[in-house]
Length: 249
Image 1 (cartoon, rainbow, N blue to C red):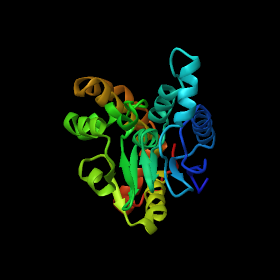
Image 2: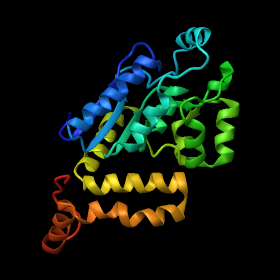
Image 3: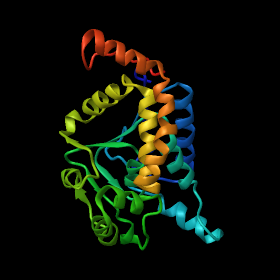
């Protein structure tokens, strides 16, 4: 923990290859972050690369012995979506395949200028297996999603920022600091409101604007009852905008 920010560091040398064990670790780590009452999460790599995708050897071996592959990816995606605090991916080096899908499961993506990012599964005869197709479609539209998954190219982070896939591109040496500035800002914000905003975005994406409109009243009740709402109003009246000290409750 760095204050109220849970820092989750991938360090499975040499390339943070995704497999069942890593997926299970991610799930356990999110449970730990929830227990710590983290108000923001950073997902980063301690290696030269964020992740080079799935462990293909393990995948082939499992498919030789099973009728289908189930590494718990759907459960992981759900856990990322339903985690009550914002999750920020800090992307460096190569970020492709399952690694890119892991970043896409986060709420926000900060990427180093030199990062090379893409859905490259087609180059080994696969399609994205961990939600990239639907998330790219939501972020960048159907045409860009098809381009990325059908051609399997790697793109500079700046290109994906223009396509609304990456939120920020920063100089390599500033990646860690820039990510933490954003995470700390989120962690010092109104946590109940952040959780409600995440939930409402999910409803809008999954079910459409009309469904989100219907869900607003119920989702907003916890925010309206929160101590942070009262703190924010009091601070605004006494000191002006932007200086409230939220406690996350």
